[in-house]
Length: 280
Image 1 (cartoon, helix red, strand yellow):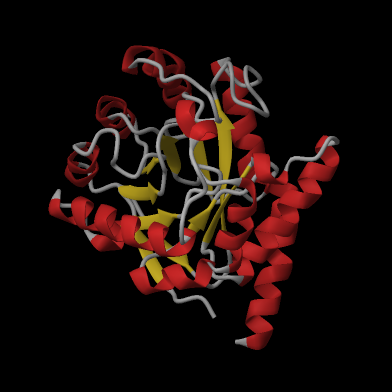
Image 2 (image 1 turned 180 degrees about the vertical axis):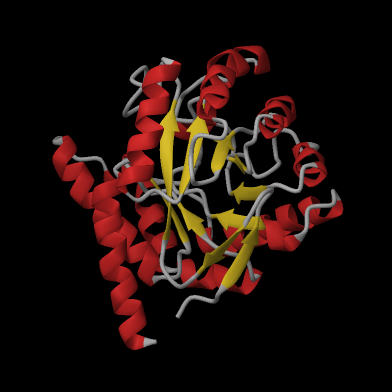
């Protein structure tokens, strides 16, 4: 069974471990690999967020900078130009918490001022370590992802030796940095960063051995949705592949799953939850 956690956010507490929490992806980027440009308009983004909540999303995660392999970094000003109108439109309109996917302290600060409750840092504090201080000042939730290198260099990286051991050690150091900056452990979650600088076959190994990260004593999030290592020629088949990875991740101990297709992944996670309950 998954360990139970009470994840403290800015305005509420989320119980993790009884049933899988779905974090729904809302990309307001022009260049994301699966839905780039689709929700760049604030009204369309708002409608999509409402739809995802209706379909069973527990958290809406808004991202304004792509971290797909090979993508280039953008300025904080450009990220905020894309993000702020959407956050203003969402403020106070959803029943579920809003998360922002960013590694920039300046962007995080503005997002938290606009009612965001979670910062999902894809870099795990490796790009802008002082982001942790901003999160601490706002009593927000923080997701620490494991990222190796940068998206623009991932294709050149050699395979990761001892993937799960390396991820565990790196995340332990990241947790320590966040605590040092004043973030309480009850506000953190960790993510092994599937696809973030890992070779294709290593992502399956990470999913299979996810339970080994339980020793860090924090809720575990995974983001397999539409990742390159699951991609098939037909988008429908990729959705089925994602559902398989979601179910496997939940059975291996994931508390939170970050997904694009809420309705389908709610069903997949629900079956895995039932299996966990039956053996627990």
